Image (cartoon, rainbow, N blue to C red; front, side):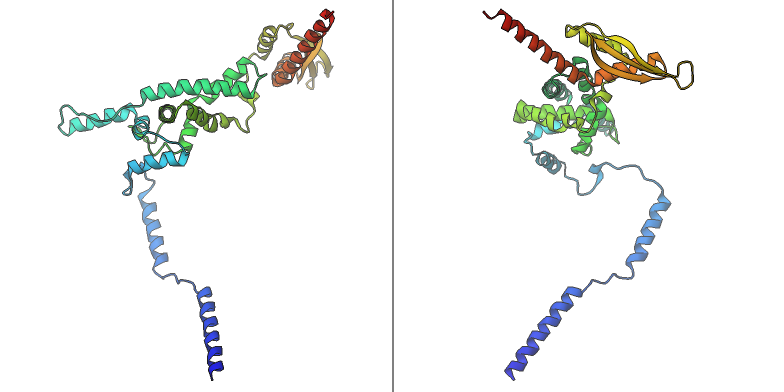
Length: 319
Protein backbone atom coordinates (compact mmCIF):
# COMPACT_ATOMS: atom_id res chain seq x y z
CA UNK A 1 0.00 0.00 0.00
CA UNK A 2 2.86 2.40 0.79
CA UNK A 3 4.44 1.83 -2.64
CA UNK A 4 1.07 2.49 -4.32
CA UNK A 5 0.66 5.71 -2.35
CA UNK A 6 4.12 6.91 -3.37
CA UNK A 7 3.36 6.24 -7.04
CA UNK A 8 0.09 8.19 -6.79
CA UNK A 9 1.89 11.07 -5.07
CA UNK A 10 4.53 11.27 -7.84
CA UNK A 11 1.85 11.20 -10.55
CA UNK A 12 -0.04 14.01 -8.85
CA UNK A 13 3.12 16.13 -8.76
CA UNK A 14 3.63 15.53 -12.47
CA UNK A 15 0.07 16.58 -13.22
CA UNK A 16 0.45 19.77 -11.16
CA UNK A 17 3.74 20.70 -12.81
CA UNK A 18 2.37 20.12 -16.30
CA UNK A 19 -0.74 22.14 -15.52
CA UNK A 20 1.33 25.09 -14.26
CA UNK A 21 3.46 25.08 -17.39
CA UNK A 22 0.50 25.16 -19.79
CA UNK A 23 -1.62 27.61 -17.75
CA UNK A 24 -2.37 30.90 -19.49
CA UNK A 25 -4.06 33.82 -17.87
CA UNK A 26 -7.41 34.39 -19.59
CA UNK A 27 -8.16 37.76 -21.21
CA UNK A 28 -11.35 39.21 -19.86
CA UNK A 29 -14.02 39.96 -22.40
CA UNK A 30 -14.22 43.61 -21.33
CA UNK A 31 -10.59 44.38 -22.38
CA UNK A 32 -11.13 44.50 -26.14
CA UNK A 33 -14.25 46.75 -26.07
CA UNK A 34 -12.49 49.12 -23.66
CA UNK A 35 -9.46 49.48 -25.92
CA UNK A 36 -11.70 50.05 -28.94
CA UNK A 37 -13.62 52.76 -27.10
CA UNK A 38 -10.41 54.50 -25.96
CA UNK A 39 -9.09 54.45 -29.53
CA UNK A 40 -12.37 55.88 -30.83
CA UNK A 41 -12.32 58.74 -28.32
CA UNK A 42 -8.67 59.53 -29.10
CA UNK A 43 -9.41 59.70 -32.82
CA UNK A 44 -12.42 61.95 -32.19
CA UNK A 45 -10.24 64.41 -30.22
CA UNK A 46 -7.87 64.76 -33.16
CA UNK A 47 -4.11 65.32 -33.06
CA UNK A 48 -2.97 66.74 -29.74
CA UNK A 49 -0.02 69.12 -29.23
CA UNK A 50 3.15 67.70 -27.79
CA UNK A 51 3.37 67.89 -24.01
CA UNK A 52 6.56 68.53 -22.10
CA UNK A 53 7.80 65.67 -19.97
CA UNK A 54 7.52 67.94 -16.92
CA UNK A 55 3.70 67.93 -17.24
CA UNK A 56 3.56 64.23 -16.26
CA UNK A 57 2.49 63.39 -12.72
CA UNK A 58 5.54 61.24 -11.90
CA UNK A 59 8.02 63.91 -12.99
CA UNK A 60 10.91 64.50 -10.56
CA UNK A 61 13.39 67.05 -11.92
CA UNK A 62 16.12 66.47 -9.33
CA UNK A 63 15.99 62.72 -9.91
CA UNK A 64 16.18 63.29 -13.66
CA UNK A 65 19.28 65.47 -13.24
CA UNK A 66 20.95 62.75 -11.17
CA UNK A 67 20.03 60.07 -13.72
CA UNK A 68 21.33 62.25 -16.59
CA UNK A 69 24.89 62.17 -15.28
CA UNK A 70 24.73 58.47 -14.44
CA UNK A 71 23.52 57.58 -17.94
CA UNK A 72 26.50 59.39 -19.42
CA UNK A 73 28.86 57.91 -16.80
CA UNK A 74 29.98 61.43 -15.88
CA UNK A 75 30.10 63.28 -12.58
CA UNK A 76 28.36 66.66 -12.68
CA UNK A 77 27.91 69.25 -10.00
CA UNK A 78 24.15 69.44 -9.52
CA UNK A 79 24.10 73.25 -9.45
CA UNK A 80 26.27 73.52 -12.56
CA UNK A 81 24.21 70.96 -14.45
CA UNK A 82 20.97 72.73 -13.59
CA UNK A 83 22.54 76.01 -14.69
CA UNK A 84 23.65 74.43 -17.97
CA UNK A 85 20.08 73.32 -18.68
CA UNK A 86 18.49 76.70 -17.89
CA UNK A 87 17.95 79.12 -20.75
CA UNK A 88 17.64 82.87 -20.24
CA UNK A 89 14.23 82.83 -21.90
CA UNK A 90 12.91 80.57 -19.13
CA UNK A 91 14.01 83.05 -16.45
CA UNK A 92 12.28 85.91 -18.30
CA UNK A 93 9.14 83.79 -18.63
CA UNK A 94 9.06 82.95 -14.91
CA UNK A 95 9.61 86.59 -13.94
CA UNK A 96 6.74 87.68 -16.19
CA UNK A 97 4.50 84.98 -14.73
CA UNK A 98 5.22 86.13 -11.17
CA UNK A 99 4.51 89.75 -12.12
CA UNK A 100 1.15 88.66 -13.48
CA UNK A 101 0.46 87.03 -10.11
CA UNK A 102 1.07 90.33 -8.33
CA UNK A 103 4.73 90.00 -7.29
CA UNK A 104 6.31 93.37 -8.07
CA UNK A 105 10.00 92.37 -7.72
CA UNK A 106 10.28 88.64 -8.47
CA UNK A 107 13.49 86.95 -7.35
CA UNK A 108 14.50 83.59 -8.77
CA UNK A 109 17.42 81.47 -7.60
CA UNK A 110 18.23 80.52 -11.20
CA UNK A 111 21.28 81.31 -13.35
CA UNK A 112 21.20 81.03 -17.14
CA UNK A 113 23.74 79.05 -19.14
CA UNK A 114 25.24 81.85 -21.25
CA UNK A 115 28.61 81.79 -19.49
CA UNK A 116 28.83 78.00 -19.44
CA UNK A 117 27.91 77.84 -23.15
CA UNK A 118 30.72 80.27 -24.01
CA UNK A 119 33.38 78.32 -22.10
CA UNK A 120 32.09 75.02 -23.47
CA UNK A 121 32.14 76.31 -27.05
CA UNK A 122 35.77 77.42 -26.82
CA UNK A 123 36.80 74.11 -25.27
CA UNK A 124 34.93 72.16 -27.96
CA UNK A 125 36.49 74.20 -30.76
CA UNK A 126 40.03 73.55 -29.57
CA UNK A 127 39.50 69.85 -28.86
CA UNK A 128 37.80 69.25 -32.24
CA UNK A 129 40.63 70.97 -34.11
CA UNK A 130 43.22 68.86 -32.30
CA UNK A 131 41.30 65.61 -32.85
CA UNK A 132 40.86 66.28 -36.57
CA UNK A 133 44.48 67.23 -37.07
CA UNK A 134 45.67 64.13 -35.20
CA UNK A 135 43.32 61.84 -37.17
CA UNK A 136 43.93 63.46 -40.58
CA UNK A 137 47.57 64.60 -40.53
CA UNK A 138 47.81 65.10 -44.33
CA UNK A 139 44.40 66.73 -44.79
CA UNK A 140 44.72 70.41 -45.83
CA UNK A 141 43.78 73.21 -43.49
CA UNK A 142 40.81 74.18 -45.66
CA UNK A 143 39.35 70.71 -45.20
CA UNK A 144 40.03 70.71 -41.46
CA UNK A 145 38.23 74.06 -41.14
CA UNK A 146 35.26 72.74 -43.13
CA UNK A 147 34.99 69.64 -40.92
CA UNK A 148 35.31 71.83 -37.81
CA UNK A 149 32.48 74.09 -38.97
CA UNK A 150 30.35 71.03 -39.75
CA UNK A 151 30.84 69.52 -36.29
CA UNK A 152 30.27 72.88 -34.55
CA UNK A 153 27.09 73.62 -36.51
CA UNK A 154 23.77 73.88 -34.71
CA UNK A 155 22.36 70.98 -36.72
CA UNK A 156 24.98 68.46 -35.60
CA UNK A 157 25.11 69.67 -32.00
CA UNK A 158 21.31 69.60 -31.79
CA UNK A 159 21.29 65.96 -32.91
CA UNK A 160 23.94 65.07 -30.33
CA UNK A 161 22.18 67.04 -27.60
CA UNK A 162 18.85 65.39 -28.30
CA UNK A 163 20.53 61.98 -28.40
CA UNK A 164 21.91 62.27 -24.86
CA UNK A 165 18.49 63.27 -23.49
CA UNK A 166 18.63 67.02 -22.89
CA UNK A 167 15.36 67.71 -24.71
CA UNK A 168 13.20 66.81 -21.69
CA UNK A 169 15.46 68.54 -19.15
CA UNK A 170 15.95 71.94 -20.77
CA UNK A 171 14.20 74.81 -19.02
CA UNK A 172 13.21 77.19 -21.82
CA UNK A 173 10.22 79.14 -23.05
CA UNK A 174 9.92 77.37 -26.40
CA UNK A 175 8.46 73.89 -26.87
CA UNK A 176 9.18 71.85 -28.92
CA UNK A 177 12.76 72.85 -28.24
CA UNK A 178 14.41 74.70 -31.11
CA UNK A 179 17.63 73.56 -32.77
CA UNK A 180 19.67 76.52 -31.54
CA UNK A 181 18.51 75.94 -27.97
CA UNK A 182 19.61 72.31 -28.09
CA UNK A 183 22.99 73.32 -29.49
CA UNK A 184 23.62 75.98 -26.84
CA UNK A 185 22.56 73.58 -24.11
CA UNK A 186 25.07 70.97 -25.24
CA UNK A 187 27.85 73.57 -25.20
CA UNK A 188 26.81 74.52 -21.68
CA UNK A 189 26.82 70.85 -20.62
CA UNK A 190 30.42 70.58 -21.86
CA UNK A 191 31.33 73.69 -19.89
CA UNK A 192 29.65 72.30 -16.77
CA UNK A 193 31.49 69.00 -17.14
CA UNK A 194 34.83 70.81 -17.50
CA UNK A 195 34.23 72.69 -14.24
CA UNK A 196 32.89 69.61 -12.45
CA UNK A 197 35.32 66.87 -13.52
CA UNK A 198 38.14 68.68 -15.30
CA UNK A 199 38.96 69.60 -18.88
CA UNK A 200 40.38 66.17 -19.67
CA UNK A 201 37.01 64.50 -19.07
CA UNK A 202 35.27 67.23 -21.07
CA UNK A 203 37.64 66.76 -24.02
CA UNK A 204 37.04 63.01 -23.97
CA UNK A 205 33.30 63.67 -23.77
CA UNK A 206 33.49 65.85 -26.90
CA UNK A 207 35.49 63.20 -28.74
CA UNK A 208 33.02 60.46 -27.81
CA UNK A 209 29.85 62.33 -28.75
CA UNK A 210 30.79 64.98 -31.33
CA UNK A 211 33.89 63.89 -33.27
CA UNK A 212 32.47 60.38 -33.70
CA UNK A 213 29.63 61.98 -35.68
CA UNK A 214 31.98 61.73 -38.67
CA UNK A 215 31.86 57.92 -38.60
CA UNK A 216 30.53 56.55 -41.88
CA UNK A 217 30.73 59.95 -43.64
CA UNK A 218 32.95 60.95 -46.55
CA UNK A 219 35.01 63.96 -45.53
CA UNK A 220 35.29 65.01 -49.18
CA UNK A 221 31.51 65.37 -49.37
CA UNK A 222 31.53 67.67 -46.35
CA UNK A 223 34.42 69.68 -47.79
CA UNK A 224 33.32 70.59 -51.31
CA UNK A 225 34.79 74.00 -52.30
CA UNK A 226 32.96 75.77 -55.15
CA UNK A 227 36.24 76.50 -57.00
CA UNK A 228 38.16 73.26 -56.65
CA UNK A 229 40.99 74.26 -59.00
CA UNK A 230 41.77 77.39 -56.95
CA UNK A 231 41.79 75.27 -53.78
CA UNK A 232 44.26 72.86 -55.39
CA UNK A 233 46.44 75.77 -56.50
CA UNK A 234 46.50 77.26 -52.98
CA UNK A 235 47.41 73.93 -51.41
CA UNK A 236 50.21 73.24 -53.89
CA UNK A 237 51.68 76.72 -53.47
CA UNK A 238 51.63 76.28 -49.71
CA UNK A 239 53.52 73.01 -50.12
CA UNK A 240 56.11 74.72 -52.32
CA UNK A 241 55.04 72.94 -55.52
CA UNK A 242 54.37 74.21 -59.01
CA UNK A 243 50.82 75.39 -59.79
CA UNK A 244 48.41 72.87 -61.34
CA UNK A 245 48.29 72.52 -65.12
CA UNK A 246 45.07 71.10 -66.66
CA UNK A 247 45.76 69.16 -69.85
CA UNK A 248 43.47 67.40 -72.28
CA UNK A 249 44.54 63.75 -72.33
CA UNK A 250 41.61 62.22 -74.23
CA UNK A 251 38.41 63.02 -76.07
CA UNK A 252 35.65 61.32 -78.03
CA UNK A 253 32.65 62.50 -80.04
CA UNK A 254 33.69 66.15 -80.43
CA UNK A 255 30.82 68.38 -81.73
CA UNK A 256 28.22 65.69 -80.96
CA UNK A 257 25.70 65.23 -78.19
CA UNK A 258 27.79 62.31 -76.89
CA UNK A 259 31.01 64.30 -76.54
CA UNK A 260 33.36 63.19 -73.74
CA UNK A 261 36.59 64.78 -72.60
CA UNK A 262 39.28 63.53 -70.24
CA UNK A 263 41.36 66.17 -68.46
CA UNK A 264 44.37 65.50 -66.30
CA UNK A 265 45.91 67.90 -63.79
CA UNK A 266 49.71 67.90 -63.57
CA UNK A 267 52.23 69.50 -61.29
CA UNK A 268 55.95 69.23 -61.94
CA UNK A 269 55.28 66.61 -64.65
CA UNK A 270 53.38 64.44 -62.14
CA UNK A 271 49.77 63.42 -62.80
CA UNK A 272 47.68 64.38 -59.76
CA UNK A 273 44.17 63.45 -60.92
CA UNK A 274 41.85 62.99 -63.88
CA UNK A 275 38.26 63.96 -64.64
CA UNK A 276 35.61 63.24 -67.25
CA UNK A 277 32.90 65.50 -68.63
CA UNK A 278 30.78 66.41 -71.63
CA UNK A 279 32.62 69.76 -71.84
CA UNK A 280 36.18 70.81 -71.19
CA UNK A 281 35.12 73.00 -68.25
CA UNK A 282 33.18 70.16 -66.62
CA UNK A 283 36.08 67.76 -67.11
CA UNK A 284 38.49 70.30 -65.59
CA UNK A 285 36.24 70.74 -62.51
CA UNK A 286 35.88 66.99 -62.06
CA UNK A 287 39.65 66.55 -62.34
CA UNK A 288 40.18 69.21 -59.66
CA UNK A 289 37.71 67.46 -57.36
CA UNK A 290 39.52 64.18 -58.02
CA UNK A 291 42.77 65.82 -56.91
CA UNK A 292 41.10 67.03 -53.71
CA UNK A 293 39.84 63.49 -53.03
CA UNK A 294 43.38 62.13 -53.43
CA UNK A 295 45.14 64.86 -51.48
CA UNK A 296 46.20 62.62 -48.61
CA UNK A 297 47.97 60.29 -51.08
CA UNK A 298 49.39 63.18 -53.10
CA UNK A 299 50.71 65.07 -50.10
CA UNK A 300 52.12 61.84 -48.71
CA UNK A 301 54.02 61.24 -51.97
CA UNK A 302 55.28 64.82 -51.92
CA UNK A 303 56.49 64.33 -48.35
CA UNK A 304 58.26 61.07 -49.22
CA UNK A 305 59.90 62.59 -52.31
CA UNK A 306 61.11 65.62 -50.33
CA UNK A 307 62.56 63.37 -47.63
CA UNK A 308 64.33 61.25 -50.25
CA UNK A 309 65.74 64.42 -51.85
CA UNK A 310 67.03 65.70 -48.50
CA UNK A 311 68.52 62.26 -47.76
CA UNK A 312 70.35 62.24 -51.11
CA UNK A 313 71.71 65.75 -50.42
CA UNK A 314 72.92 64.54 -47.04
CA UNK A 315 74.66 61.56 -48.66
CA UNK A 316 76.38 63.76 -51.26
CA UNK A 317 77.49 66.25 -48.61
CA UNK A 318 78.89 63.49 -46.38
CA UNK A 319 82.71 63.27 -46.87
